[in-house]
Image (spheres, rainbow, N blue to C red):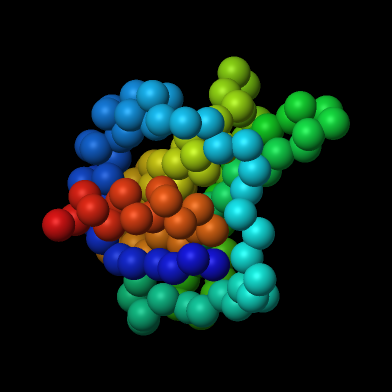
Length: 132
């Protein structure tokens, strides 16, 4: 994993309106960076929840989807979601959509004070910039 950080999910959801437009104007990324280290899941602090999210691409079938899992500090799954995505081929947008769907899922089930974790370094950096 690239990293993680804690923040208020409602602030991020409010920011999403401009996010997709900005990335559509950016250069298309044609491959996903492969990390050399093996990711290890670490639990969030007691009373917090961790959202892990990712986009998946099947090049041959041209199928695209996002997956989200939310766990508590004990590692117990409190929510999960997987869904197909249609009409988008921008890797960065898809990774961002996975993060945003994870945040929305947290809001839908009444969770706040979450930690977002993804292997999409650029998306997480943009979320961090939003906080400052």
